[in-house]
Image (cartoon, rainbow, N blue to C red; front, side, top):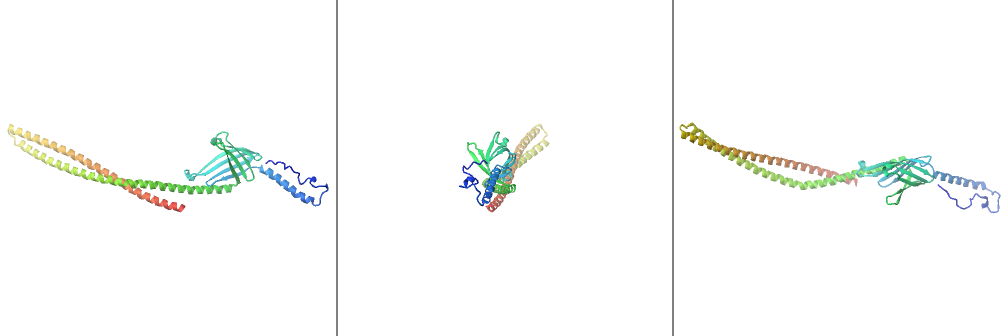
Length: 320
């Protein structure tokens, strides 16, 4: 720190005493305190530009900036650390550290910040005082922002870091619970809106199953009827063939056998319809099982979401 002359004579000058060059009584007693005071000012001036080795802090409501500086013969080294509350980060805080190097002369300092982060050539300048360090930081707008870091200690910094971390953890827990509550509420509303549609689909599927089962019963009856006709025609043909002794009787038996074969084709056709109807029944039954499973999962999820929402409400009310 530079000191300028005050422009007035020192109170220790003999000329300040009018008309006398002799030593006044008690002069030694008055001069000694003044000498001590002068030495104190000299020491203070030297100390203000002295070793900057220390830890410095700039505290905010939800953040903490830390400068850790070691000075060796005017050369500075250390790190700059930013601790911020960040609900999107693990643990609720973001913590980044940048190495610094610099120089100190008198009441002025220059700090070069980690170029891999802020880009090559980025510098911070500042001034020192008994209380700490004031840093001038250029902004993109062209303005200069001042940050004043006060001198601190490692135990105090640890306490401040713990306080911010604890606050961040609680804030993140609250935010996470709030997000869970909001998301659960949205999902619950969606499922409660979707559930009637699932129930309606289940009713339609059951109605379709009843119709498919009725059709299956109908074609099965038709198959049975055609099978009875075929068996009757076959029996007549077989009897005619057994009793045929003449050419005319043989021709008649052949005609009856052809009729039986035709009736057997009707049976085969009816059996195909039975197979198709049975497939429809099985398909609708599978759809019903799928819908019932969906409804069961929906009901289970609705119950789970209601438990989550109730628990989140209690947790949030306790944190207020």
